[in-house]
Image (cartoon, rainbow, N blue to C red; front, side, top):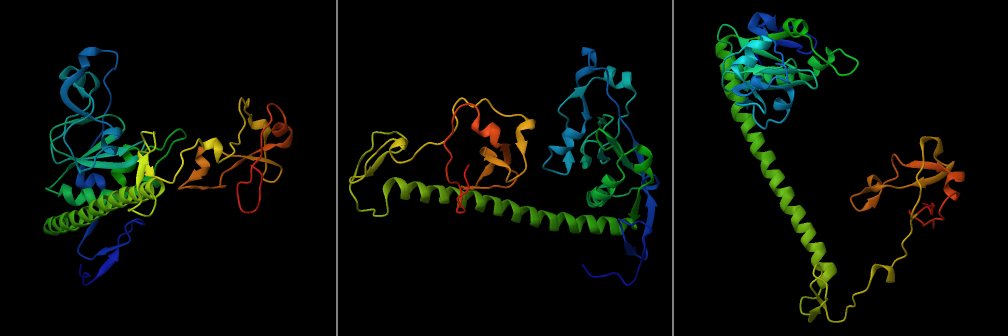
Amino acid sequence: MRPYPAYKDSGAEWLGAVPEGWEVVPVKAAFDVIGGTTPKTDIEDYWDGEISWITPADLSSLDSRFVYASSRKITPAGLESCGTTLFNAGSIILSTRAPIGSLAICGETMCVNQGCKALSPRNDNVSDFYYFVFFSAKEALNVLGRGSTFLELSGEQLASFRIPLPPLPEQQAIARFLDKEVAKIDALVAEQRRLIALLAEKRQAVISHAVTKGLNPATPLKPSGIDWLGDIPEGWEVVRVKAIAKLAGRIGYRGYTTADIVEEGEGAITLSPSNIREGAISFQQSTYISWAKYVSGVPITPWRCNSKGADC
């Protein structure tokens, strides 16, 4: 990735400087921006057809940059009823609401709902190159979103959004380069995930073996009488949990409301499963209830839950 001889200001904050020979244009100069809509959902004849109808959810669930089908499909009658437009394979589909910025290159003729826009390239612009452009622009597109319930990017805002326009040979070369480099990175990520999964299995196996079979492989074993435990060393006992630990908690506790919640240090801390992380107790985002609520109702036995001796 050698630097270009000279760069210029693109005039677009998200883009910064671009090579001197590149243009910077609004999306509408490089693509036809095509909106979508939804057929009436209560008319059966409009649904379960053969026409792919892409929604933001379809884009968010992809593990590839290509989309070939949608989770729901419509019929020709459904297509005609709502006025949505079919566009060709090679177009880019971009979600413009909930969330903004999910995208894919369509692999066949299809249409979209009102949560997406299709970008049909003009003048042979390279879809693979612009997939990576819009992927890079996701944060900038989200900044443009408006709405109180959820953010939405209007068709006008998208059409006016400024993007780079290199000469076609450079678009093609960059797309080929990114295809190879991204494939290498994806392969490394997949390999690391496999390694992490194997290490997690090994970690579990080491712990399980040590706590159920001990450290001496030559120790004679005997049946524990418990299916999950299997055989155990001959000198070990099998007991109930209550024989080695005191169970603390509030049984039949009637719960608390927001009116019972107080600031840290002004009441008793309450713990939930969300406070247990990786074998330790985390006190971040803990809830405290008033002492009055703490002492009311069914009695509870406090226990020491950290090295500082705090009652829980």
